[in-house]
Amino acid sequence: MARRKNKITGRFVPLRHQLIESDAFKSLSSTAKIAYLYFMHDIKNDYESEVILTLGQAKKYGVCRSPSTFNKAKRELVQNGFLDPVDGGGLNAPAIFKKSERWRLFGSGHYKPMKYKPGHGSKYFRTAMRDERMRAKILTARHRST
Image 1 (cartoon, rainbow, N blue to C red):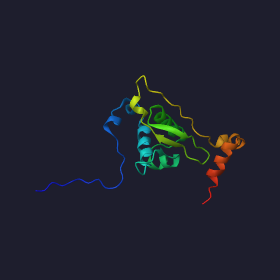
Image 2: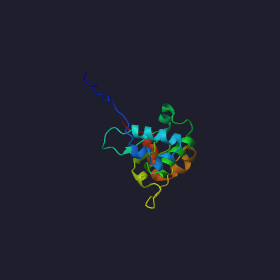
Image 3: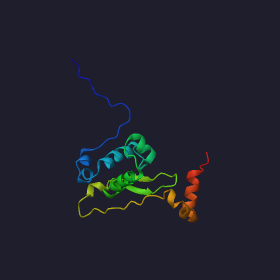
Image 4: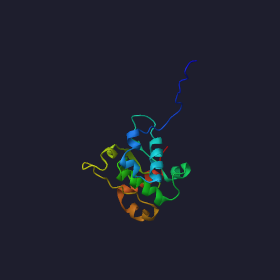
C-alpha cells in the first residue's frame, strides 16, 4: 500500500513550538492568546509585518465582546513582546501593530517592555478635533476618497 501524503490546503496560522512553550505566551490571558491568533490571521504574505484586528472583527470571531477586554488583550500582547504598536487608532480608524519577536527575551535582563496607548475613543472627539494631526486622521478615516 502506498502512503498518503497529508497536504495542507488553504491558509493557516503557524505557531512555533518555541512560541507556545515560552513564558511570554504562557502568561497571556486566554483572550489575548485568541486575539494573537487573529492578529496573525491578518497576515496575507511573508512580507507583511503590520497587523490589524478591529473590535468588530474580534466580536465576530468570538475573541471578546467589550472594548475594555479587547484593549486589555492588546495591552498584554504589547507588554509581552508579541506586537509593537504603530498607530493607536480610534475614532473610526483601527489600531495598527507590527508583529514582534521581543517575546524571545521575555523574562530576561535584556527584555524591554513597551507600553500600549489606545487611540482616542468617541469621548475624546472634541479634544482630538482641536489637534491638527488628529483632526486630519479623523477626517481621513471617516471620509476616505475612493
